Length: 571
Length: 53
Image (cartoon, rainbow over all chains, first blue to last red; front, side, top):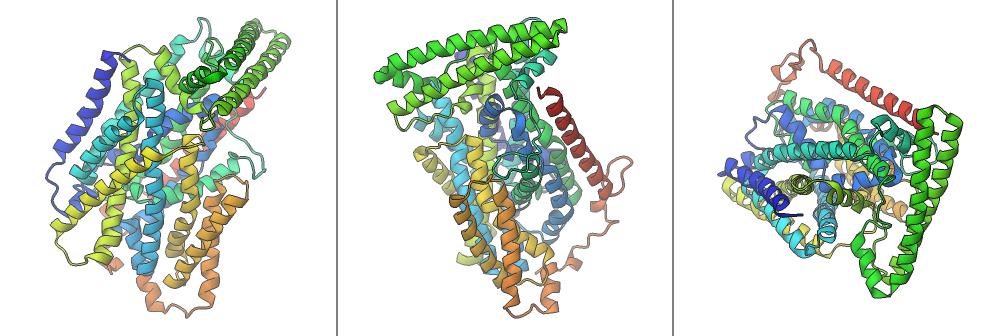
C-alpha cells in the first residue's frame, strides 16, 4: 500500500465514523438511544440488517471459500428467505405491538423473569464470543499481509467503532452502516471489474465459468442425503432456515436494527429486501472467489497464500524443503496452465473429445499442485506447531494487494474495515442494550431515571467493546473464519429459537417448562457437538426441536396454565 | 403487560398496507419473495448441472 491507498483508507473510515458521531450527537433519552429516532426508512433498515450480518469475515473468507471449495457454501443461505418471511409475518408484529427494546423482553412477558434472563444470557455468551472473532478476524489477516502490528490493528480499529457506537447509539449504527455498505458494494464491484479485465486476452466470462466448472468450483447445489456433508440443499434449507430464523428473529443485534423502523411496513420491507438479495449477494462474493481461482490458472499463485508463515518457516530451518516443494508446485502449475490453455483452444474449436482429454490432464496436474500444497502445510506445521495451515482467508487479500491498482487497494482494504465496523457496531449496540434492559434495569437498578439508563447503556456498550478487543488480542483460530462464526452461532441459536417458537406457538407451555427444557437442550447440544461429526448447521434444528419437545414433556408433569394466563401470554 | 387492544393493528390499519404499487396484501409480497427464492434455487441447480463435467 502506498500513500494514496492510506489516504483513501483513512479518509473513508474516519469520514464515516465522524459523520455518524456528529449527526447523532446529543441522544439523551433511552428510547432514542436504543431505537433511534423512530423514522428509519425501509431501505436503511434493509442495508443495516445486511451490514450487520456481512462482517469483514464475509469479504475475506467467503472469496477464499469460493477459491478453495467452490460456490457450494451458498447453500448455507438457502434457508434465509423463508426465515425472513416467517419473521416478517409472525415475529415482527408481536415485537412492535409489545414495544419491546430487546427480543428477550418478550420472553419475560410471555413466560417469566428467569426465562427472559436465560434467553438474554445465551445471547450475551454467544454474541460476546462472536464479537471477539469479528474484530480479530480481519486484524490477523491484514496485519499478517500488511506487516502491521496485530495488537495496534485490533486496538485502533476497535476503539474507533466503540467511540461512535457509544456516542450515537442505535441511530449512529444505522447511519454509518448505510454508508459502510455503500463502500462495500462499490469496492467489491470494482474488484470484479479488475478481475475480469486481468483475465488473459480472449478469455471471456463464459470461458472463465467453463474453467471454474471444469475444476468443480461451480457445484452450487448438492442433493446428497449424507448428513456428514457440511453443505447440502437439505442442510441449507432446513438447518439454514433455523439458523436464519434464530439469527434474524431472536438475535438482538438484528432485532434492534429492524425495530428502528417508522412502522411495521418499513420494518417488513427492510426484511424482504434481505430475503431477496441475501442469496445473490453471497453468490456474487463466492463467484468472485471462483473467478480468482480461474485467474490463478493463468498467473502463478504462491504455494501457500500466508506468505509470512512461509517466510518464517523458510528462515528457521525449513528453507530447503520449502523451496523444493515450491519448485514442484511451480512445475505442476506450469503443466496445468498448458493443459488449461489447450483445453480452451479445443473448446473454441468445437473439439469436445480433445477438450475433455486436456481438461482431464489439467485436473491431474491440479492434483499435483494440491499435493505440493499439502506437503508445504506439513512442513510449516513441523516448523511451528502454532501455524494455521488453512490459508483460504489470505487468498482474496493477496489478489487485491498483488493485482489491483493503487487507490483501489486502499478502497478494498476500506471495504474490509467498513464491514468490520458495521457488524461490530451492531453487535456492541445489541450487547449494551441487552445488558441494560434485560439485566441492569430489570434486576439490579429498577427505578432510575432515563438519563441514568442512557449513561449505563453507554458504559456497558463500551465495556463489551473492551471485552471484544481483549478477546481479540488473545484469540487464535484454526477454522476458516466465517465457519468459526457460524459454528458458535449454531451451537446456541437452536435452543434460543426453540424458546421463541414455544412462546409464539405452544400456548399451553409455561415458563418453568420452557426454562428447564432450554437448559437441558443446550447441555445436550454441547454433548452432541463434541461427540458427533454431523454438519454444524443441523445443531440449529436439533437444539430447537429438543427444546420444544422437552418443554411439552416437562409441562405434562407441571400444573396446567390457566386460560387467562394463556390469553395474557399470547399478547 | 401491554394487551393487544392497547396497540390495535388490523388488516386495514395504515401500518399494514404494503404501500407497493398493485400489491395490497402482505401475503402477496411473501409469495413474490418466495417465488424469487425458488427461481434462484432453480438457476443454481441449472448452473451446477450445466458446468458439472
